[in-house]
Structure formats: C-alpha cells, structure tokens
Image (tube, rainbow, N blue to C red):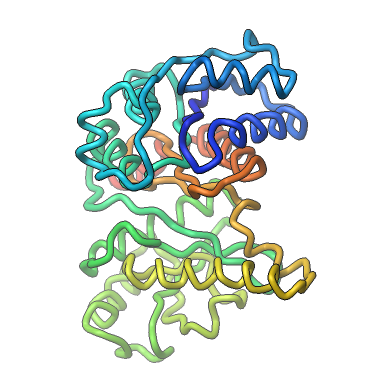
Length: 313
C-alpha cells in the first residue's frame, strides 16, 4: 500500500504534514509506504528537524505550489509541476494508491474529475462531512459543498455512496439514510426534497428511514444524511463554529471536542475511481495523521471497487 501526501498543501506546510507523519508512525503499526510530494529541499530540512531519516520515505520533487486562492482549473492546468498536479499524476499512473492534500480544494476536485475521473454511472462525485452525534458515533452528511444545485437523482446517488462509505469504513452493517428536510412528514420541503423522497423510498440499495429535521442531526436517528451541497455546507460551517465557540468560552466537554475537525482528518471524494482525501487548509499534525488513517482504511476495504461494482449493477 502506497499513500501519496501533498507536503505543500495547507497553511502550515510542510511542517504540520511532517508532524502528522510522525504521529502516524508513532501511534499505528501500519506498513503503508508514504510518498512525500513537494519541494524536496524544504521536506528534507523539516524531516531532519523532526529526527526522521529521509531515506525512510520516497520524496518526489514538485517545485510549484497551487495557492489557496488561485483559480482551481487555471492553476491545475498551468502548474503541472505543482504538488497537487504531480500527486494526481502519480495516482493516475498507479505509482500511489491514494492521494492526500490539505491544499486548494477546488484544484483537488479538478484533479479528481479530470485526472482520475468519475466511476461509470456516477453523475456527480461528492464529499461528505462528519457530524458528531449524542451517542459519540459520527454521522455522515453529504453533499458538503461541491454540488450546490442538485437534482433528485444526484441525492439518491449521494445516499448510495454515503451508505457504502460508512458500511465499509465505519463497519455499520445496514446504515440508515435520512433526507434533510423541514419536517418529518412525506410531502414536506421544497421541490427537490419532495421529488427525492419517493426515489429514496423505492431504491432497494438504500435503508431509507424518511425525513430528518435540523433538531435531529445530533441524535442517533440516521447514519447518513443527504442534501444538496448548499445546505450541507451551511450545516458543516455551523458545526465547525460550535467547537470554536466552546474553545473561546473555555467549555471543556468530551462531546464538544468531537466537533474539532482534526479528530477526523479529511474527507474522501466519493464517486471517483481512486482514493482522494481532501483536508482543511488549517490542518495541523493530528488532522494529517487521521487523513492517512482514513486513506489506509479505504484502500484496505476496497471501497472504490465496491462502489464501482454497486453502480455497475
């Protein structure tokens, strides 16, 4: 198993990525090989500072960086020697089995769609977000922001993709799927929700339990919540604010700590042919460690192949 890591992605690159590698090596017994992609001089300096032998890793030099505020498509096309572009080339050509970055999210999606491509039958790849529930287990909300406007068929596919993810990575045998809505009753909501409900209800690949209201997001009612990306991103940003608020107020609670995104690392792009993990731009060491862990789980459980097989059916 070979996992590629964009060392130049994120606000604190490459130091925090290397700290994440240090945590991964210290806290796991993994045999995964790590390929470090980025400015070789900087990588070697920081590896030495963290008392790593550079010979432990394969370092692939990538002299360019796609900035967080650059136009994704333009930058990806023009900066073919950037750490993101080089990472996707390695993934597309089979040199690595998964690619991780906390860099420009738009550029990561461009690479996912044009270098790796969507699996046959997938209309729109998606990303989800973690939602801590009162029982301590995470829920999974998708789409989380890359598909702001959706059709009912898109939400059905999101439900299948989310179910396969939590089933194979979180070991939830028959994940419950809920439709984010403004009421529990069938027929509630806007035109999208009304049209999506019967499609979810009739699909045999989905364990659909009905509508889920905002007050139920943190309860143990559904494992997968589906919505358009506009709604999902609002929920995501609100959830992130909860941790920031409790930190500023000095509130110490194990449950509220679960709203810290670093506990989960990053999120996979679901619906593309190979594992791609996107992290937050402000990721620190723990987030990078957890991104490597999630990539490893996806590879070990053949999640992409299972998604492919499901949609081929």
